[in-house]
Image (cartoon, rainbow, N blue to C red; front, side, top):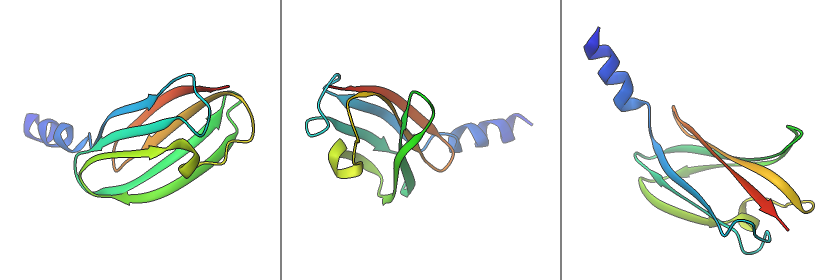
Length: 100
């Protein structure tokens, strides 16, 4: 059973190092960067603090480092605090961003 646990642990992470900066920021200055361990479909989502989905974007990303401007992924309706989620094959990362 330890072999199965090790195998699932190695498959468990295909996304790492999600960074949103600068934070706080304006939507046209903020960038999102992350490392993709193996090529996969990645879904970026933006949710407000009430849990309402403001937007999402699905991309297939090759392995390696990726950086995007927030405004290239989402149309942010107004200032406030948001949660940026990134869902990969078997991992999910999230960061809070404040848009002023």
